Length: 130
Picture 1 (cartoon, rainbow, N blue to C red):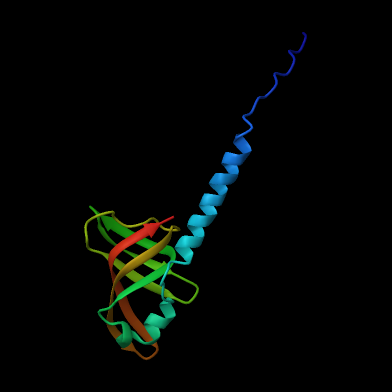
Picture 2 (tube, rainbow, N blue to C red):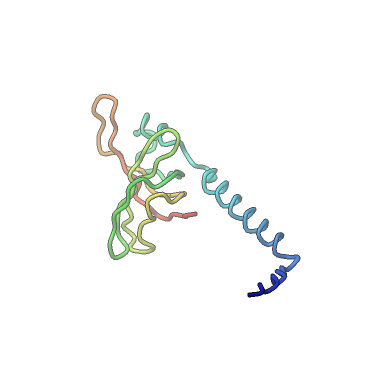
């Protein structure tokens, strides 16, 4: 039985460029989210919570835990310095999935500090995910 000759594969000359463009945009998005303008290190917020109490703060990092329903929920964001809980009470947008890179803006609320542990949350006003 004779084998059929291989068919040539034709690709658009723009194909490699569009792939590079997508890769560039994905890299840029990662940079923007991780370098969230004005983002404060979570450790800094937790080390001196009274300085930030009731103020609008920005944090950026990776979602490590997430739970929500009907647009409301709670999730944890971890950066290189610590982890902070974010509460979404706006009812819009829901919560990001575990593993997502996010930039969050919201009101900082410190519940209490015991020894070297501070329990605090950010009451989300808005977030961006990658």
